[in-house]
Image (cartoon, rainbow, N blue to C red):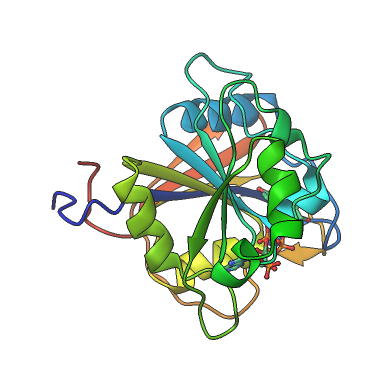
Length: 221
Ligand SMILES: NC(=O)c1ccc[n+]([C@@H]2O[C@H](COP(=O)([O-])OP(=O)(O)OC[C@H]3O[C@@H](n4cnc5c(N)ncnc54)[C@H](OP(=O)(O)O)[C@@H]3O)[C@@H](O)[C@H]2O)c1
């Protein structure tokens, strides 16, 4: 089925341990992918128009979200940040080619003391409707991204954001790198979730196994 509503095709991509954890402890960064699967993740980034993380991941990891281990363009970086907590020291504010897009709430976007320092450093704000919990309404976000010409979106985490995209039915594809270790830490999913994957393909990349599968019939426009 072709994308008719201009909502981007969404790939949820993350790395986990054998016991389904994405970090050793909440709020900390735990490198999980080996060199081969990490290079694969960068190729996946290069194949998407935009890459999105939650503010929790920015605070924990300070990611650059650039394509460094593959050839291709950097995707547009996007942060879900309802309260504009992005630190002014964030690496994303020194992105080599893109102004980061901050998806935020109308309330935060109306607070000049929060907004102006971020805009001065190049951030572009996307004020959006919020859900009942005061977080960004993901349907509104995807519609806005479609309107800005984003056809493919890679969602890299963390746990809260992965769960929100999967539970909300917003993910069309999944790419999960499974590293051969246990962590006993932060689970990828923050609440129980039953989802059927279709057409799963497993591939060995170095010591890791990467699962790719489909959650919907949609295809990129
Ligand atoms: N292994 C991997 O592949 C991988 C990848 C990425 C991250 N991580 C790890 O994941 C951890 C961070 O995960 P996290 O769960 O703390 O943070 P997160 O998922 O990155 O961000 C969650 C935050 O995003 C904001 N948000 C806004 N709208 C939202 C919505 N609709 N749904 C969900 N969140 C929304 C909320 O903060 P506000 O209310 O302030 O907006 C929420 O607390 C870190 O330890 C990091 O290292 C691992």
